[in-house]
Length: 190
Image 1: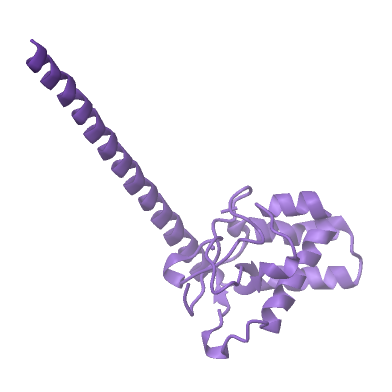
Image 2 (image 1 turned 90 degrees about the vertical axis):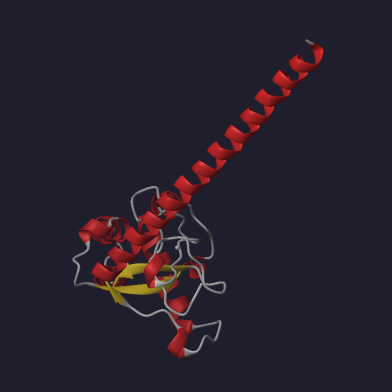
């Protein structure tokens, strides 16, 4: 639910309801997360095993009950072992933006959402932006990806605290100014 530079980090946290799919992007490893975009790319990281499982099930059964466990692994980072490889996908390949994976599943169904992630990987591999190979986002381990997500969450939290402090300071200054004016007026009139 809850995405720059040559190195790419996972999108915003993958907790249900966080981030946007189709806008779930990645950025530098030091600032991972679901909303970071690189030159038009809309990067997201998915477990390689889950993506391969989805491809296999789509070519065979195409049954929701067979695909759902793989989609669950895309939505919940805790289900992905630290040593597993995470692959970058470009969500522009989906053709539509979604606020979350849950919204994607709701609108496209389990089979449609599974197909969307396969399309997103194919779109990434096609490299339509003709990005030099050395600058393209690379696969990473789930441990690296989770670390990047945590760093991004921490960064967002700190930014939120800074914004709150700044707003509090502005309000305090406004309050002081407002408080000073009436007392000055009273002094003049009294």
